[in-house]
Image: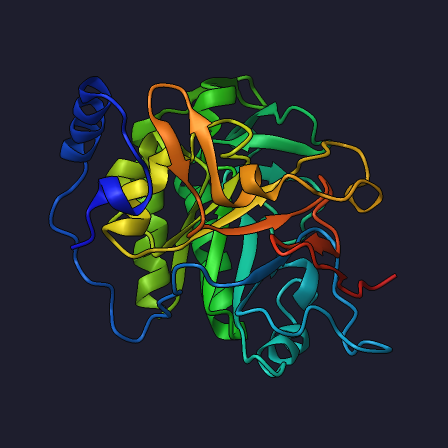
Length: 323
């Protein structure tokens, strides 16, 4: 087993080591190997992520980046709501023969999606997501909500996705207390509910022979690190919390697909990323010391998660998107 202290994070003091040992002791210690027919993504795999916009398939010219190992795309947007898997098959037949992760929001009600049941009770969603028009936090303990998400996972498997990326499962942080949008019926979002929800989603995913990731939600990672197959993280360098993935990567050998938005709402392509040491190799974290992030699969994106991407070697690409 790789030594955690030497692999990812250097801990300069005994207090920090003790705190880390405590965190690891709280995590499950006997990971069950995933079924052999489920994709195992390697640590450090290259990737591209494009969400909420449909890829231009077939493209009018070269389709870039053509070398990545993994694509993360919006499930419903790129399949006409589950009716067409042309884009998924196109990606899987690129020269690098990449795997395809299919994204959907598992913890939010998006009012433009068309797969909600006609009798879906509006009390199943509550407070709006800050900064995202038309999205509301879902009651993830609701069986009706869970069944919608189970169906999305089954759809992803049928369409040829290798994995799913369920987003917005950390509502316990932004909106722990909610009132339904029909009668005002209250519901709560807690870490325990997130763990139960992800365990159920993972069960359905694995039954359908596809992998599943944990998006952000670092507070519950120790309880789910043996359940999920990979992680997707936004801004762990900016938030100085990448050390939370140390055991996940070094001990369990699971990848972290890592996104940073160094220029915030500005257009990143007009402000090249120059400080790659900080974003791609090491940085200093309070109470921890030097954190080595070189094993994370890092991309730089703008907040829209459109076709533009930059990698740690400074190379930029723009994936073709449909009008």
